[in-house]
Image 1 (tube, rainbow, N blue to C red):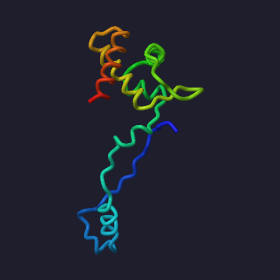
Image 2: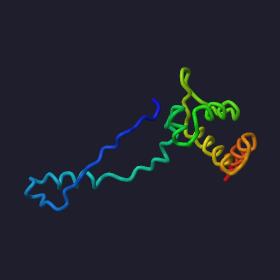
Image 3: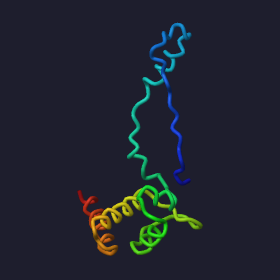
Image 4: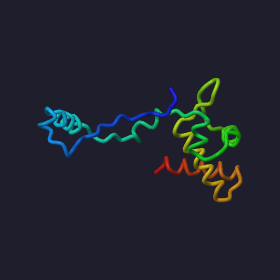
Length: 123
C-alpha cells in the first residue's frame, strides 16, 4: 500500500512528577521506553511507495512535469490506474530536478541523473 500520512505514536513522560505518587505508572512507562532502540529508517525505504502527487510535493515539481519526465526518462513505476513511485524513482526525479535547477536542459539532466546513480552504485 502506498505511503500515506503516517502517524507515529509518542509517549510523554511526566519527569517532574514523583512516580511513587502515580502508583508506579511513570516507572512502568520508563521501563517500556528503556528497551526500545532507534529505528534505522533507511533500512526500510525500499518498501515506501508514493503516489504521483506525493512525489511532486517532495520534489517541488508539477504533476505535468513529473508525468513528462517519467515518460522521457523511462522512470519505472507501478500501478495500473495511478502511477506509484518507489524510493529509487523519487531519487531519480529529485536528481533530474537538481540538474534542471543548475541550468541543464531535460535531456542533459536525465543523463546526469543516470550517470550519478550509476556512479553511486559503483562506490
